[in-house]
Length: 148
Length: 154
Image 1 (cartoon, rainbow over the protein chains, first blue to last red):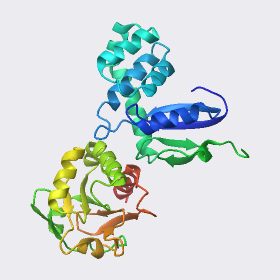
Image 2 (cartoon, one colour):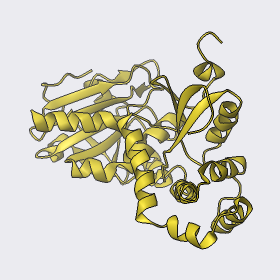
Image 3 (cartoon, chains in turn yellow, orange):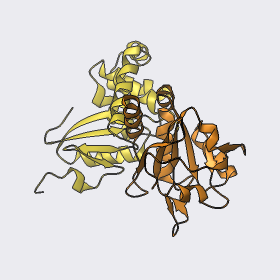
Protein backbone atom coordinates (compact mmCIF):
# COMPACT_ATOMS: atom_id res chain seq x y z
CA UNK A 1 0.00 0.00 0.00
CA UNK A 2 1.16 3.51 -0.64
CA UNK A 3 -0.22 7.00 -0.98
CA UNK A 4 -3.10 8.67 0.71
CA UNK A 5 -6.66 9.19 -0.41
CA UNK A 6 -9.29 7.02 -1.95
CA UNK A 7 -8.37 3.32 -1.86
CA UNK A 8 -7.71 1.84 -5.29
CA UNK A 9 -6.85 -1.85 -5.64
CA UNK A 10 -5.28 -2.64 -8.99
CA UNK A 11 -4.93 -6.08 -10.52
CA UNK A 12 -2.21 -5.85 -13.11
CA UNK A 13 0.78 -7.30 -14.89
CA UNK A 14 4.24 -5.87 -15.51
CA UNK A 15 4.07 -6.83 -19.16
CA UNK A 16 0.79 -4.98 -19.76
CA UNK A 17 1.25 -1.54 -21.36
CA UNK A 18 -2.18 -0.41 -20.18
CA UNK A 19 -1.10 -1.17 -16.61
CA UNK A 20 1.90 1.13 -17.07
CA UNK A 21 -0.44 3.83 -18.32
CA UNK A 22 -2.86 3.26 -15.44
CA UNK A 23 0.11 3.53 -13.09
CA UNK A 24 0.90 7.01 -14.36
CA UNK A 25 -2.73 8.02 -14.01
CA UNK A 26 -2.93 6.69 -10.45
CA UNK A 27 0.37 8.27 -9.44
CA UNK A 28 -1.06 11.70 -10.09
CA UNK A 29 -4.52 11.03 -8.69
CA UNK A 30 -3.96 11.25 -4.93
CA UNK A 31 -5.04 7.73 -4.08
CA UNK A 32 -4.04 5.05 -1.61
CA UNK A 33 -2.90 2.20 -3.80
CA UNK A 34 -2.60 -1.54 -3.52
CA UNK A 35 -1.19 -3.55 -6.43
CA UNK A 36 -2.07 -7.22 -6.88
CA UNK A 37 -0.68 -9.60 -9.46
CA UNK A 38 -2.79 -10.98 -12.29
CA UNK A 39 -0.29 -12.76 -14.56
CA UNK A 40 -1.91 -14.50 -17.55
CA UNK A 41 0.78 -16.55 -19.27
CA UNK A 42 -0.81 -16.88 -22.70
CA UNK A 43 -1.11 -13.11 -22.96
CA UNK A 44 2.01 -11.99 -21.09
CA UNK A 45 4.57 -14.82 -21.02
CA UNK A 46 6.97 -13.06 -18.59
CA UNK A 47 4.27 -11.70 -16.30
CA UNK A 48 4.57 -14.34 -13.60
CA UNK A 49 8.38 -14.18 -13.54
CA UNK A 50 8.14 -10.40 -13.17
CA UNK A 51 5.53 -10.65 -10.43
CA UNK A 52 7.91 -12.98 -8.59
CA UNK A 53 10.69 -10.41 -9.05
CA UNK A 54 8.56 -7.66 -7.47
CA UNK A 55 7.68 -9.90 -4.53
CA UNK A 56 11.32 -10.94 -4.10
CA UNK A 57 12.19 -7.23 -3.94
CA UNK A 58 9.39 -6.82 -1.38
CA UNK A 59 11.23 -9.25 0.91
CA UNK A 60 14.05 -6.68 0.94
CA UNK A 61 11.62 -3.84 1.57
CA UNK A 62 11.70 -2.58 -2.03
CA UNK A 63 8.40 -3.67 -3.62
CA UNK A 64 7.40 -0.25 -4.93
CA UNK A 65 10.92 0.54 -6.12
CA UNK A 66 10.91 -2.62 -8.26
CA UNK A 67 7.27 -2.01 -9.27
CA UNK A 68 8.05 1.50 -10.48
CA UNK A 69 11.18 0.34 -12.25
CA UNK A 70 9.31 -2.41 -14.16
CA UNK A 71 6.37 -0.17 -15.07
CA UNK A 72 8.66 2.63 -16.24
CA UNK A 73 10.46 0.45 -18.79
CA UNK A 74 8.60 -2.57 -20.13
CA UNK A 75 11.01 -3.04 -23.03
CA UNK A 76 13.76 -4.53 -20.85
CA UNK A 77 12.33 -7.39 -18.84
CA UNK A 78 14.81 -10.24 -19.30
CA UNK A 79 16.85 -11.62 -16.41
CA UNK A 80 19.99 -9.49 -17.03
CA UNK A 81 17.73 -6.41 -17.00
CA UNK A 82 16.28 -7.53 -13.68
CA UNK A 83 19.78 -7.89 -12.20
CA UNK A 84 20.61 -4.41 -13.44
CA UNK A 85 17.46 -3.07 -11.77
CA UNK A 86 18.43 -4.82 -8.52
CA UNK A 87 21.80 -3.13 -8.61
CA UNK A 88 20.21 0.25 -9.23
CA UNK A 89 17.72 -0.22 -6.37
CA UNK A 90 20.45 -1.55 -4.08
CA UNK A 91 19.19 -5.09 -3.53
CA UNK A 92 21.23 -8.08 -2.43
CA UNK A 93 21.31 -9.92 -5.77
CA UNK A 94 22.03 -13.41 -4.42
CA UNK A 95 19.12 -13.13 -2.03
CA UNK A 96 16.86 -11.74 -4.77
CA UNK A 97 17.72 -14.67 -7.05
CA UNK A 98 16.95 -17.20 -4.33
CA UNK A 99 13.77 -15.45 -3.21
CA UNK A 100 12.22 -15.05 -6.64
CA UNK A 101 12.37 -18.81 -7.14
CA UNK A 102 11.08 -19.61 -3.66
CA UNK A 103 7.81 -21.31 -2.72
CA UNK A 104 6.96 -18.36 -0.47
CA UNK A 105 7.06 -15.88 -3.34
CA UNK A 106 5.24 -18.22 -5.75
CA UNK A 107 2.48 -18.70 -3.18
CA UNK A 108 2.22 -14.93 -2.59
CA UNK A 109 1.67 -14.30 -6.32
CA UNK A 110 -0.71 -17.24 -6.70
CA UNK A 111 -2.74 -15.91 -3.77
CA UNK A 112 -3.26 -12.64 -5.67
CA UNK A 113 -4.15 -14.54 -8.83
CA UNK A 114 -6.71 -16.71 -7.01
CA UNK A 115 -8.25 -13.65 -5.34
CA UNK A 116 -8.55 -12.03 -8.77
CA UNK A 117 -10.33 -15.05 -10.23
CA UNK A 118 -12.72 -15.14 -7.28
CA UNK A 119 -13.42 -11.43 -7.80
CA UNK A 120 -14.25 -12.07 -11.47
CA UNK A 121 -11.19 -10.33 -12.90
CA UNK A 122 -10.65 -11.21 -16.58
CA UNK A 123 -8.27 -8.55 -17.87
CA UNK A 124 -5.52 -6.13 -16.89
CA UNK A 125 -5.67 -3.59 -15.54
CA UNK A 126 -8.77 -4.06 -13.41
CA UNK A 127 -9.24 -1.45 -10.69
CA UNK A 128 -11.48 -1.79 -7.67
CA UNK A 129 -12.60 1.57 -6.33
CA UNK A 130 -15.04 1.46 -3.41
CA UNK A 131 -15.84 -2.14 -4.31
CA UNK A 132 -16.74 -1.25 -7.91
CA UNK A 133 -14.69 -2.98 -10.63
CA UNK A 134 -13.38 -1.08 -13.64
CA UNK A 135 -11.98 -3.47 -16.25
CA UNK A 136 -9.52 -2.21 -18.82
CA UNK A 137 -7.87 1.18 -19.08
CA UNK A 138 -9.53 3.33 -16.43
CA UNK A 139 -10.93 6.75 -17.12
CA UNK A 140 -10.17 9.55 -14.68
CA UNK A 141 -13.79 9.40 -13.48
CA UNK A 142 -13.16 5.93 -12.03
CA UNK A 143 -10.64 7.20 -9.52
CA UNK A 144 -11.78 10.76 -8.93
CA UNK A 145 -12.91 11.35 -5.39
CA UNK A 146 -16.66 11.92 -4.95
CA UNK A 147 -17.41 15.56 -5.64
CA UNK A 148 -14.28 16.07 -7.75
CA UNK B 1 -31.36 -18.25 -23.87
CA UNK B 2 -31.73 -21.85 -22.87
CA UNK B 3 -32.93 -22.37 -19.31
CA UNK B 4 -31.67 -24.82 -16.67
CA UNK B 5 -33.75 -28.00 -16.57
CA UNK B 6 -34.04 -28.13 -20.37
CA UNK B 7 -32.56 -31.01 -22.32
CA UNK B 8 -29.50 -29.64 -24.16
CA UNK B 9 -30.16 -29.34 -27.93
CA UNK B 10 -28.25 -31.89 -30.01
CA UNK B 11 -25.31 -30.81 -32.11
CA UNK B 12 -22.42 -32.22 -34.10
CA UNK B 13 -19.61 -29.74 -34.86
CA UNK B 14 -16.02 -30.04 -36.02
CA UNK B 15 -13.34 -29.04 -33.54
CA UNK B 16 -10.14 -27.16 -34.44
CA UNK B 17 -8.65 -30.34 -35.90
CA UNK B 18 -11.73 -31.24 -37.91
CA UNK B 19 -12.81 -34.01 -35.52
CA UNK B 20 -16.56 -34.14 -34.96
CA UNK B 21 -17.83 -33.52 -31.44
CA UNK B 22 -21.46 -34.31 -30.64
CA UNK B 23 -23.63 -33.62 -27.64
CA UNK B 24 -23.77 -37.39 -27.10
CA UNK B 25 -19.97 -37.34 -26.50
CA UNK B 26 -20.62 -35.17 -23.44
CA UNK B 27 -22.73 -37.80 -21.70
CA UNK B 28 -21.42 -38.84 -18.29
CA UNK B 29 -19.41 -35.66 -17.68
CA UNK B 30 -20.11 -32.07 -16.64
CA UNK B 31 -19.46 -29.78 -19.59
CA UNK B 32 -19.34 -26.03 -19.99
CA UNK B 33 -20.16 -24.69 -23.45
CA UNK B 34 -18.43 -21.34 -23.81
CA UNK B 35 -20.24 -19.40 -26.55
CA UNK B 36 -18.09 -16.43 -27.60
CA UNK B 37 -18.45 -13.96 -30.50
CA UNK B 38 -15.30 -14.27 -32.61
CA UNK B 39 -11.81 -15.74 -32.74
CA UNK B 40 -9.01 -13.15 -32.40
CA UNK B 41 -11.25 -10.34 -31.10
CA UNK B 42 -9.59 -8.68 -28.08
CA UNK B 43 -12.32 -9.46 -25.55
CA UNK B 44 -12.64 -13.11 -26.60
CA UNK B 45 -8.87 -13.41 -26.36
CA UNK B 46 -8.94 -12.18 -22.76
CA UNK B 47 -11.78 -14.55 -21.91
CA UNK B 48 -10.16 -17.70 -23.31
CA UNK B 49 -6.76 -16.74 -21.86
CA UNK B 50 -8.21 -16.56 -18.36
CA UNK B 51 -10.18 -19.81 -18.70
CA UNK B 52 -7.01 -21.54 -19.94
CA UNK B 53 -5.12 -20.24 -16.90
CA UNK B 54 -7.59 -21.90 -14.49
CA UNK B 55 -8.29 -24.93 -16.69
CA UNK B 56 -6.48 -27.40 -14.39
CA UNK B 57 -8.63 -26.22 -11.46
CA UNK B 58 -11.83 -26.33 -13.51
CA UNK B 59 -11.01 -29.83 -14.70
CA UNK B 60 -10.15 -31.05 -11.22
CA UNK B 61 -13.52 -29.57 -10.20
CA UNK B 62 -15.05 -31.94 -12.75
CA UNK B 63 -15.77 -29.57 -15.65
CA UNK B 64 -14.77 -30.02 -19.31
CA UNK B 65 -14.73 -26.80 -21.35
CA UNK B 66 -15.73 -26.41 -25.02
CA UNK B 67 -15.44 -23.07 -26.81
CA UNK B 68 -18.00 -22.44 -29.58
CA UNK B 69 -18.08 -19.63 -32.13
CA UNK B 70 -19.13 -19.15 -35.76
CA UNK B 71 -15.51 -19.26 -36.97
CA UNK B 72 -14.21 -22.11 -39.12
CA UNK B 73 -12.14 -25.01 -37.81
CA UNK B 74 -9.05 -23.53 -39.50
CA UNK B 75 -9.52 -20.18 -37.76
CA UNK B 76 -10.05 -22.03 -34.47
CA UNK B 77 -6.79 -23.92 -35.00
CA UNK B 78 -4.84 -20.69 -35.55
CA UNK B 79 -6.55 -18.99 -32.58
CA UNK B 80 -5.89 -21.97 -30.33
CA UNK B 81 -2.22 -22.05 -31.30
CA UNK B 82 -1.78 -18.31 -30.82
CA UNK B 83 -3.28 -18.41 -27.34
CA UNK B 84 -1.92 -21.76 -26.23
CA UNK B 85 -5.45 -22.85 -25.41
CA UNK B 86 -5.80 -26.60 -24.92
CA UNK B 87 -9.56 -27.07 -24.63
CA UNK B 88 -11.49 -27.81 -27.85
CA UNK B 89 -12.93 -25.00 -29.97
CA UNK B 90 -16.00 -26.04 -31.95
CA UNK B 91 -16.87 -24.48 -35.31
CA UNK B 92 -20.52 -23.42 -35.53
CA UNK B 93 -19.73 -22.45 -39.11
CA UNK B 94 -22.11 -24.25 -41.44
CA UNK B 95 -24.99 -23.58 -41.28
CA UNK B 96 -23.62 -20.49 -39.60
CA UNK B 97 -24.63 -20.13 -35.95
CA UNK B 98 -27.11 -23.01 -36.03
CA UNK B 99 -26.06 -24.33 -32.62
CA UNK B 100 -25.94 -20.84 -31.11
CA UNK B 101 -29.50 -20.37 -32.41
CA UNK B 102 -30.63 -23.65 -30.87
CA UNK B 103 -29.25 -22.50 -27.50
CA UNK B 104 -30.88 -19.08 -27.90
CA UNK B 105 -27.66 -17.06 -27.98
CA UNK B 106 -27.34 -16.03 -31.64
CA UNK B 107 -27.40 -12.33 -32.62
CA UNK B 108 -28.72 -12.39 -36.18
CA UNK B 109 -27.94 -8.78 -37.05
CA UNK B 110 -24.31 -9.21 -36.01
CA UNK B 111 -23.77 -12.68 -37.39
CA UNK B 112 -22.24 -14.11 -34.22
CA UNK B 113 -23.31 -15.46 -30.85
CA UNK B 114 -23.68 -13.65 -27.57
CA UNK B 115 -21.11 -14.25 -24.86
CA UNK B 116 -22.75 -17.02 -22.89
CA UNK B 117 -21.94 -20.02 -20.72
CA UNK B 118 -24.07 -23.17 -20.62
CA UNK B 119 -23.37 -25.97 -18.14
CA UNK B 120 -24.57 -29.37 -19.29
CA UNK B 121 -24.83 -32.16 -16.72
CA UNK B 122 -23.82 -35.82 -17.21
CA UNK B 123 -27.43 -36.63 -18.29
CA UNK B 124 -27.26 -33.90 -20.98
CA UNK B 125 -29.66 -31.60 -19.16
CA UNK B 126 -28.76 -27.92 -18.88
CA UNK B 127 -27.92 -27.30 -15.22
CA UNK B 128 -26.88 -23.62 -15.40
CA UNK B 129 -26.62 -20.85 -17.93
CA UNK B 130 -25.31 -17.31 -17.99
CA UNK B 131 -25.43 -14.60 -20.62
CA UNK B 132 -23.30 -11.44 -20.52
CA UNK B 133 -25.39 -8.25 -20.62
CA UNK B 134 -23.19 -7.08 -23.52
CA UNK B 135 -20.66 -8.98 -25.65
CA UNK B 136 -17.95 -6.68 -24.24
CA UNK B 137 -18.48 -8.02 -20.72
CA UNK B 138 -16.50 -11.18 -19.99
CA UNK B 139 -18.01 -13.64 -17.52
CA UNK B 140 -15.32 -14.29 -14.89
CA UNK B 141 -14.16 -17.83 -14.22
CA UNK B 142 -15.62 -17.37 -10.73
CA UNK B 143 -19.10 -17.87 -12.23
CA UNK B 144 -18.12 -21.33 -13.47
CA UNK B 145 -16.56 -22.25 -10.12
CA UNK B 146 -19.71 -21.05 -8.32
CA UNK B 147 -21.96 -23.06 -10.66
CA UNK B 148 -19.85 -26.19 -10.12
CA UNK B 149 -20.05 -25.70 -6.38
CA UNK B 150 -23.83 -25.22 -6.52
CA UNK B 151 -24.14 -28.37 -8.61
CA UNK B 152 -22.10 -30.35 -6.09
CA UNK B 153 -24.21 -29.03 -3.21
CA UNK B 154 -27.49 -29.90 -4.98
